[in-house]
Structures are given as C-alpha cells and as structure tokens.
Length: 94
Image 1 (tube, one colour):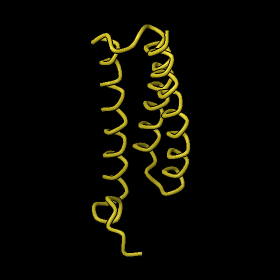
Image 2: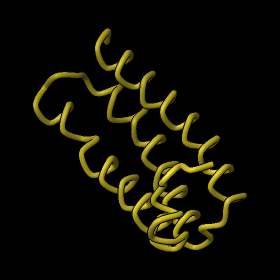
Image 3: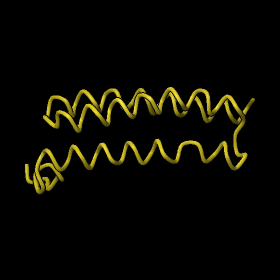
Image 4: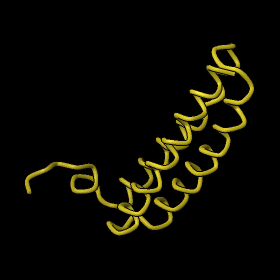
C-alpha cells in the first residue's frame, strides 16, 4: 500500500513494544486530572477500569505483535477510551 508504518519500517516486535509503551504512558498520566483537582473522585474510580484495560492491551500486544492481535487490541482500546471518556464526564459532574 505504500504506507510507512512503524511495523513496516521497524518490524512487528518493535511496533508492539512501542504501542504497549504508549498504553503504559497513558495509564501513568491518568491520575493527574484528579491529583490537580480538575475532576472529582468518581473519575479515579472509573478511569481505573480503563487503566486495567490499557495495561491488559499493552501486555497483549507486547507478547503477540501479530496483525490479528493488533486488530483485536485496537477494538479493545476503543472500549477503554469510551470508559475513560465516561470517567471524565462523571468526574466533572459529580
């Protein structure tokens, strides 16, 4: 297709590790809105569920960086993002 993705230029293993690292980075910054009082306690409770999902996704893609696994993780990630969005909404209105 001519698309220069990380998987094509650096390999599937590197792409899996890189993607997993980005998920872990997202988890590591998720408490900040609560810690700086931008959102209330429901945020931290709900976002913890998304964080668990992101960690699971990171482990999955690092262990098995195949195309099929990447597509599966991509679909799961959409769910974790939805849960994180709900966390922001609930943390803002509560």
